[in-house]
Image 1 (spheres, rainbow, N blue to C red):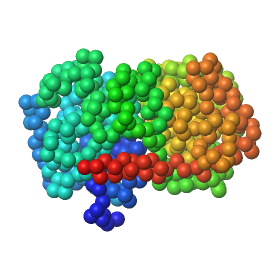
Image 2: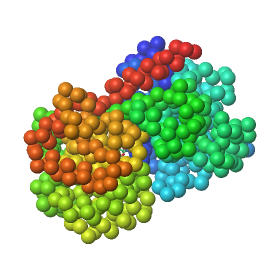
Image 3: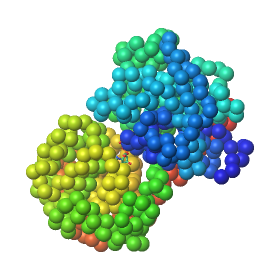
Image 4: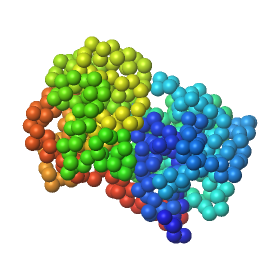
Length: 484
Ligand code: ADP
């Protein structure tokens, strides 16, 4: 699409973007949101040129731009690559220490030791890039701790007039490093105080985004409230409270053109609410492929990172019991080894538990399309995308009502076909046996096919797209840029 000259120029900065590199929901958002904003803004994306990204597959080429960045006492050569993906210009920062690693951030248990240098350098390179741009950028949209320092670098350079929005996707990952990170990055020790980067004697990247961005957003209205409490604030609740007047919660959406059962190329049988019975064919072929018997039983799935956030401890604790119920359960995930071991050991004892260890985008999509129910017993969930994808694929989510799960899943007890938001089975983890009770409720619902279908068809007609969220971000972008 040809851009009108009047469109505001935005750079969306993220450490992962689907389909180039993905470890979780951040990558989905980093494509879906810019795509939804594209008709309104001249928006491009910037991310690291990880060595795992296939340059040929995505036609990624050198832009001819390179520069040197001084970090502490060392100079680093930075090369800039680019491509166009689904109509969006995507830029890639290539510099050795950032990109030559095997994975994005390290292992699930421990990040790479030099992540401070890697993402400090990334943030500096972003600022160097916007400085050399002939047509200035109106606004930078930063995401999570990996690009948070951009907000500080922007404020340090009074020659740059670019505004800055900072989105917190998950407060549990703040980018905390030893104090010496400050000098490693060549940052003044004057930043080492409570109002800035200091955090219990360490240096905290996320605090830079919170302190120096013009507007902070987080990924659901409920999470915006929760992070002000000690239970969910991860030690930053006081600091966030100070910046509350510039904080807004906006519910994430999903990229419907990417996550739609009607067009998803991973599915054998595409379907929509008008051809919902085809979902059953997907279920049958999936069960056959995974050698799961008793195919008339309801299929429950879990897809996600194996980490305490996702409620894995509860799932592991109850898994033996769950397996005695008349259901099949398929688990897809990777993450902390202790959880994989536990799940592997339990699933080897029960034929109705199917465990696939790893990260597999295609398999996940076939699971969304085959399942009857999806389990999300998360302890906290800033927004969560799984439940939105599940509802869009006609699968009932079973959720612990926290964070964005509370904002996006209404209880089926209150089902109202005129309420065009999604419905699922909601429980409160704090109540004893809550998960087991929720699963029993699902089994009851499964017996009542008429009600089950009604809820699923309703969910599939709901709008989980980025339309609403993108409008809210557009309002913020416009008000900030007009204020300049
Ligand atoms: P997170 O906290 O991991 O970001 P979200 O619910 O926001 O959680 O997003 C998770 C995204 O990652 C979804 O698109 C989900 O389908 C996908 N996902 C998670 N784990 C896996 C896996 N093991 N294989 C394939 N996709 C996965």
